[in-house]
Length: 317
Ligand SMILES: NC(=O)c1ccc[n+]([C@@H]2O[C@H](COP(=O)([O-])OP(=O)(O)OC[C@H]3O[C@@H](n4cnc5c(N)ncnc54)[C@H](OP(=O)(O)O)[C@@H]3O)[C@@H](O)[C@H]2O)c1
Image (cartoon, rainbow, N blue to C red; front, side):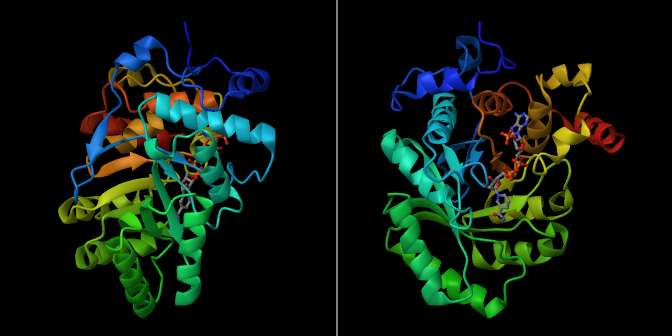
């Protein structure tokens, strides 16, 4: 029987990776597959979106490395095999965006993926050129979600003119959804992001939310729910900081009450408890971590009392 903690060796993964489009993958055990992956509706369209996604910053910036491309392909297959769809990338992640595009095309799974990327430039012509380049690198004339990248402190007039470009491109059918992201100095950006959701009727917002960065709990999550803005959590592990904080510590017994058997599930289930959260996008290049993250979207979630206990536990470390 497959175990979450069993580590695939690189050789295992590569031997499996020979046929990149193969449907049968290490993935989830039959028992794990019988527990459905939690799905939430995108408020503006009512389209279902599974709550676990995949981030690609740094770990997909691998250029033409064939072995690494085969490993990342297995992570994508595991995501899809587990019932999830969302992959988030950006032109600013080095070669990652092109790698994502190539791998999806080679594995013939582009149509199974909800593909999100980003755009950022201080010049409108360069902004448009970047979106065209993304369509090419992703081999996708139609991108599911285009997000203005790190907009919290963007000058207002530039924000308005670039959002207008995004709207026009959406209307022309290049994007299915548009939105904004932010991650640096999150607390200071929150008021402006709330204002954007209220005034600009965005489809999506992506913010820095983890047990290590909870400032969006004060008002932003409620504003996303009020305005019908789908919310994605970036840096859901605080870029791995949370794992470093619990290194050598066992997951507490009481986490079994909400079906968390690993720290990864503990951290992600905390975020998913809030119904304003549509999906989390943890980054990983490892099949076993991808499976672990998918399992955070199965089974019970903590209730309000349990969430307080979880926060107290983490703050007490
Ligand atoms: N402004 C923005 O729009 C913005 C900013 C930052 C990030 N993002 C998005 O958010 C995504 C996630 O951010 P991130 O990848 O930097 O940070 P993260 O998801 O918070 O943390 C990633 C780290 O967690 C580890 N990890 C993942 N799953 C694990 C598991 N189940 N058990 C143990 N360790 C696990 C990874 O290890 P391994 O590396 O060993 O797999 C990696 O070191 C990015 O890829 C990007 O798509 C957006």
